[in-house]
Amino acid sequence: MAKNIKFYFAIFLLFFWIVLAIIAPIVAPYDPQYVDLSLKLVSPNKTYLLGTDALGRDILSRIIYGARLSISISLSIQIILLLISIPVGLFVGWKQGKEESFFDWLTMVFSTFPSFLLAMVFVGMLGAGISNMIISVVVVEWIYYARILKNSVISQKQNEYVKYAILKGMPTTYILKKHIFPFVYGPILTASLMNIGNIILMISSFSFLGIGVQPNISEWGNMIHDSRTFFRKHPNLMLYPGIMILLAVGSFRFIASQIEEKFRGIK
Image 1 (tube, rainbow, N blue to C red):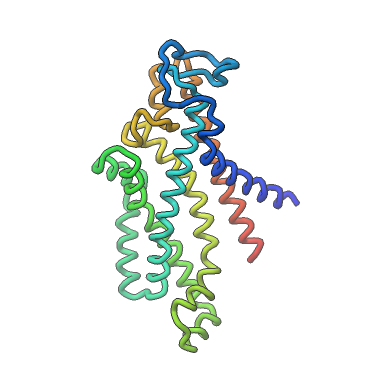
Image 2 (cartoon, helix red, strand yellow):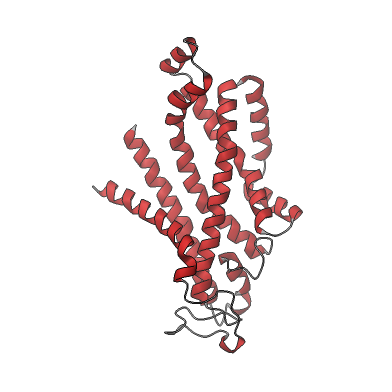
């Protein structure tokens, strides 16, 4: 019973973040970009529940729009990663041979440096901006999922029913679709959900360093970056977006752990 409650709570969290990203324009009380210097650094009150920043912008609205941006970018990156890595992983895992040798070499090259460092280098080369950030993360991360899928495919090929299907001359696409992919998508789904939190953290870090989204855009990393000057007198400016990052990352990691437990129970 306790396990089911945790699982359903994880599903609730997943839908919560997605819905929040969708309805941000509806639930945000103010325009997050509206500047009013007469209202700068206002303390939390009934009108501005979390106060305002140094430009008089409503912090609550900026945090809500920050969730919209972080979740939408992270999901977009993850979908692109899967669209690239799934066919590559299936192909390499099925063919093996020279294809696997080249893939393993490529994996070794990419794993030599931390993914965050490599992505930061690519962003630095391409320049700041959402599209360049997406490209940089995808270039660095896709091989990780392809490797998971490749190893899973190779493992599944050892099963007798797969060997029998091959001997019977069944089409490769049929074997992959019916006998292999249904048993390997679990690890990919778990890793993807886990990585959404990692991508949120990566995006925020890029923005904090000044190489992520444009400075005027409502994003949690940007908010932390902009509040550094006022940290001593107004720590809440940095605290609120920091808490949101921790909640988002923790939520997706919890979701991933519960999905993984569910798959183990099915097996």
